[in-house]
Image (cartoon, rainbow over all chains, first blue to last red; front, side, top):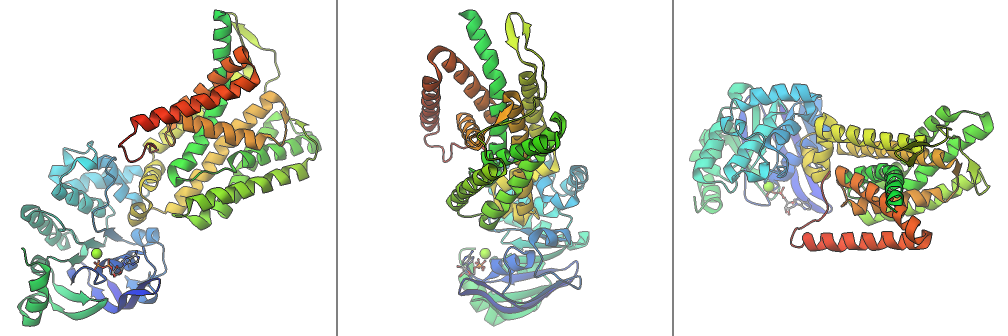
Length: 239
Length: 294
Ligand SMILES: Nc1ncnc2c1ncn2[C@@H]1O[C@H](COP(=O)(O)OP(=O)(O)O)[C@@H](O)[C@H]1O
Ligand SMILES: [Mg+2]
């Protein structure tokens, strides 16, 4: 469904992504793992149109999208839940969620989606009129996820959704992510929590210095001694 | 004395309602873009000059002139947005402001090229003598301005707080990057807000000029100044604030003019502005931004 070929991103002269090729099949979870500065967020940004790639192509459902502006990409069914959640703290949960459904075209249709989306987020439903800034880290991440799903995406890009969360909140987030394919949503997951990410993913890429160093079915990578050393050790020593 | 106070207050509210509309337009632009558009008044003036031109050349009546004025202000606003704001989105607030000052000069030049004399007649919207309620003289065209200001404020409030566009506008005002992440076309939102502000300004300017029944090249500076002061009195970037600021400015001016004359009147306004800014800085100490969000 999503196919990136030889994708390159640079900031001024600094390359952040240096020619990576990746695919996400529909209704599957694919993850990209790697340390800080590897270029993971830049890769997602290129897919959702936040940054223009300097090289390569991005095809979504067969259509080249690398030159489209972000709103056109969202309209085609790609939602991007950014790193650090980026909620509007002084707007209500309801307003944050409705904003996620901007591509629905009208407030009425966005409100319909709101009702359907909230079924998976019962703890948000009772607090719809509170400001988003009142939420705890775990709840805020749930809201960010729900806001992403409000776009009714075919593919959702998740940038480090477990960052800074308690073990319990992390487990909640991964449980929700794991359930997305059953709802027909494909996931491109960026994580530093290697163990959990591999556990929910079908396929994984390991990224460092803007390049993919290894890739393969998640179950195989989990057993790979090279991966064990390079990624389980230094990324999450304290986990 | 009591009668003077009442009459001045009523007069001030009527004039202030035009200031409030000017401030609403400023607020819309400032609230979304965090940028001052100094060419705001001059682009309204271009609209009014085009209206006058249509009046003089083709003998068009008040309704057509009013329409041409508003549309002309929107067209001039579009020109300013493309030149000063669209190329510098998301950065360089000062560059936009300086550029809008340069365009101000250009628009004033254009106005005097179109109509070189110092002042021209502008058709009145309602040409009937003032009427009296409880001893207070009221001009019908000023009353119309007040009504238009109330309608504009309500419409703007509904648009911002009850529509999909308004929600996207508030998101863009808070954080452009996040709004883009959500698939909001932030450039388009900015442009529409800008044109809406120009239309609102055009309406306000048209009502003021029609009440004065004349236009001069000073109008651009006048409109930018009144709108800016009213917005600052109301606390930068809030819709109710812009209205309160506009009305306050009108009332203070009316009393100042009556009791102290025109020079001291303006001094009084500056003193009030200074007081407002100082008080707000005091209240807002420790708060990261004293500016309110639309
Ligand atoms: N907006 C930016 N401007 C300049 N450099 C950036 C920007 N965003 C990221 N970078 C740089 O690009 C590289 C990759 O960053 P990023 O994509 O955020 O990696 P990751 O998400 O894997 O931590 C880093 O060296 C980072 O400093
Ligand atoms: Mg990142």
